[in-house]
Image (cartoon, rainbow, N blue to C red; front, top):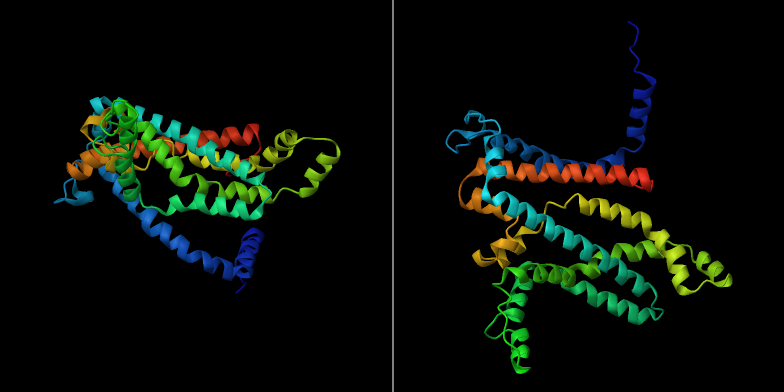
Amino acid sequence: MARVRGSPRANRLAKALFQDRYLWLLAVPAVVYYILFHYLPMYGLLIAFKDFSPFLGILRSPWVGFVWFEQFFTSIHFVRTVRNTLLLNFYGFFFNFTVPIIFALLLNEVHNSLFRRWVQTISYIPHFVSIVVVVGLINAMFNTENGLVNTVMGRLGMETVPFLILPGWFRPLYIGSDIWQHFGWRAIIYLAALTAIDQEQYDAAWVDGANRWQQLRFITLPGIAPTIIILMILYVGQMMSVGFEKILLMYGPGTYETADVISTFVYRRGIAGGDYSFAAAAGLFNSVINLVLILMVNRMSRQFTGTSLW
């Protein structure tokens, strides 16, 4: 019997897999992790289209179509949660994305290596502080009775401000504490990108008479531009998601107006209220918007800058 031979393309693929078999073996744990904890749980999204009952299970619960989506879009919480989610992410994108870049550029201009390492190390420390401790520090700093800020304001003859219960102060406290906690850690990747720029470009620019600002504008920023664009695309892909654990610890009924986001609403309605199908529909809407955003930004970036994730 004649032996059946595969196509040349399949043979090349099999040969490449065999040659790199040890590298593929290293990837197996990561692949298994994503299959078990990221793809298989997506089966549970079916309850967004069913009237889910824990006693019937996912398969035997009756189909209801898009009823839960319609309820979410027409509920009084829809506009407020989407607005708060977008505003928190917009402010977070503007400050949390730009501050690490500025910090990395400033640190790159420091020529004393000992001082630079000291500053860099100090900036990392808040990243390892837990969210619970950060919220505890916020309460200790800004509470009305004995908070440090209100105590100083009282000593200066100013009226105390209930920062923690006023809706207008929630976003500044949330964004400000997030910048303080993560700006040093987020600057690491930009500092790594800065080290990859060829020093000969700076030497040539210095010989040509370029000052520090011109070197920053024409060498440094273009050198780290691909890194900035990739991180921007990844950030935009999470525009509809915020760290709801921190919000749950910080907010209260008095600050729902500016603090309630889709994730916290899903938690209250789905987990605390037991309305799993409604929460799954709201969560699925959130994920679909994130996917659309990252596809759009990736396409725009590839078209206008030539840099993209895929």
